[in-house]
Image 1 (cartoon, rainbow, N blue to C red):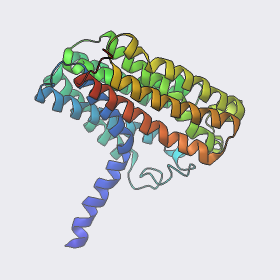
Image 2 (image 1 turned 135 degrees about the vertical axis):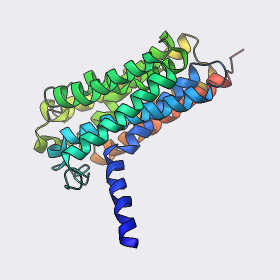
Image 3 (image 1 turned 90 degrees about the vertical axis):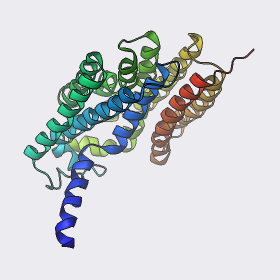
Length: 298
């Protein structure tokens, strides 16, 4: 009896791994922050829960398609070769069916319980990541993460649209923050995984343009990110709590980027990559705290 019960749990873990749960968690977190920022009080419970689940399901579906398309690449990279598809634990047809069920359910929830705009935007984000980025851009250009970063920057816009039925300039500021954050975040990873990307035949920036050029780009985009994070204060969207938090976070990130440029090591790049995830989480948390506790300088 114990053997019979262990198999479904093991298979569930394999399908769960296809959804890239850590990545999806950050996506859903940013979407939920967008939902709270879009409302003056607390978001209505049913749309909040439906939008959170729907966006999460579609994000998991896109991740599964990414795993399907890139399974041969994943098999030669240390950080991905343990995924279910390279190990033969799940078949291609099972992955397609799983992704279709997840994505279809998520889009249905968004259309019926949230609003059509959010459903269409989420579908567009799915196509942008699973098709345009994964299939077209990633194997074709070292600027893949810059162009494809538009899809990754969409979650707070989706959350905003879920609560309001429209897209405001404040939602686009949230988009810009993640869009500017994506290149230094990803290129820190690409620097210390350069050999693996080269073996996989992917034209990542360190492979095509070298380490020194990539390290300079990390610094330049971090400077751009610092400027972009000041826009919510400049437009009056956020106030003192967010400003102080953003300045501290940006200073630390700039120090990381400068050290990567002048005194690079794989250990430093790995630390910068981990910090970038913490950075975005704390920055968006500060946006929400500031939204409900707006401390003005006066």
